Amino acid sequence: MGRTAEAIAEGVAIATAAARLAVKNHILIGTIAEGGVFDTQKYMDDAREALRAMAEESEEAEENLTALRKRARGRHSDPSGTHDYRDRDVRNLRRRAKQSHGVATRLREMMQDDAALTTIVEEAREAAWSDVRHNLDRRLRVEGMRPDQDPDYDRMRDARMQALRLVDLQALSSLQRAKAKRTKKQQKAEERAS
Image (cartoon, rainbow, N blue to C red; front, side, top):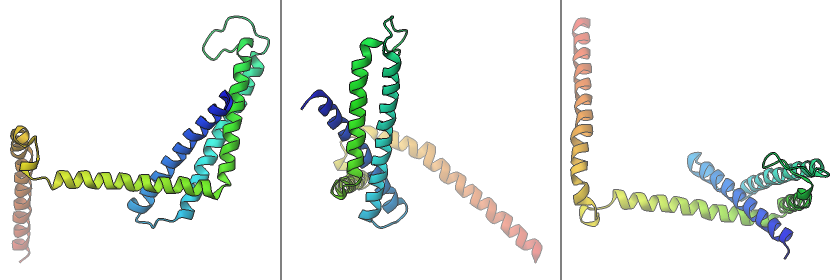
C-alpha cells in the first residue's frame, strides 16, 4: 500500500469514526432524551448524512488544494507564510488533493453501501449503550456506596459535614422561614376574608 492509499484509508477511518460518534449522539438523544425507539433505518439515514458531510468536506479540500497548486505553479520566490505555496510544493499539493478526492470517493461509496451503514449504526449503538452502562455503573457505585466501602470516607467526612452545616442546613432553614411566612400570610388573608 502506497502513501496515497494509506492516507486515504486513514482519512476514511477518521471520517467513519466521526460519523459513528455523530450517530451515537443521535441515538442517545433520540432514545433517552426524546424517549424514542431505536430504529436502525433512521440511524442509517443519520450515518449516510454524516458521511455525506465528510465527503463534501473532502471535496472542498480537494478544490482548495487544486486552486493552491495552480497558484503555486511557476512561483519560485520565498514564501511569506505557512500557506503561501511555491512551485516546489506543487507535487505535495497534487498528492494531497488526490488523497482528498480518494477519501470523498470512498465515503460516497459507503453512503450507498447498506452493510457499511449498518456497521456504523451497530458500532454507534454499542458505543451509546457502553456510555449509558458506564454512567449507570458509576452512579450506582457512588450513590449506593456505604462508608466502609469508600476509601476516602474519613478524609472527606469533615468537608461533607461543613457542607451540610453551611449549605444544606442553611437552605433548609431558609425554606422553612419562607414556608412559615407564606402560611402566616395565607392565615391573615383568610381572617380578613371571613
